[in-house]
Length: 214
Image (cartoon, rainbow, N blue to C red):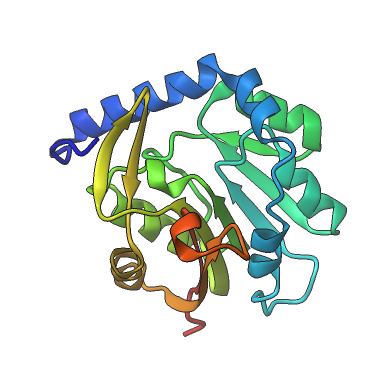
């Protein structure tokens, strides 16, 4: 699945368009396939590290059809969704009642120092490695000082390329730590999922990061 890393903005734009087209065409199947996923461990990992007074201002980055937006709202927080695929963004608005911004991850327009936490669950791996520093920098900028970023991605050994109609990059822990540290984040925790299994059976790398307060 490894392909030459895209080297131009035009190549990266085509990757985003093709990946988003997959989610647009399969929005209902994606909703059905993910609605019962238990990500309570990931939600708790984000919330427990936020030091601001509740309720929190949260950005669900890549919110899909709105499952986790509804959970955050039920917990008493103010959650905003961001989703690149139009049908999924519409589903998220209808299901959660939250504001949802439809934005391409590679063409973000985010408010500065606005959020206490960013929840990026199973989404940042779609960002080509060449574009990842810019995207991480924008997430850093939209967090308040002291704010927290949660990410969970399928892990690998640097593979990058197409899996069907979806593009993915599969970082190991050391590579992911380098990207996040370079973007100005400080690591708080990391773990592998699903919990309770041998490492070889835990394909997901979850990590929690803080934007320094000063």
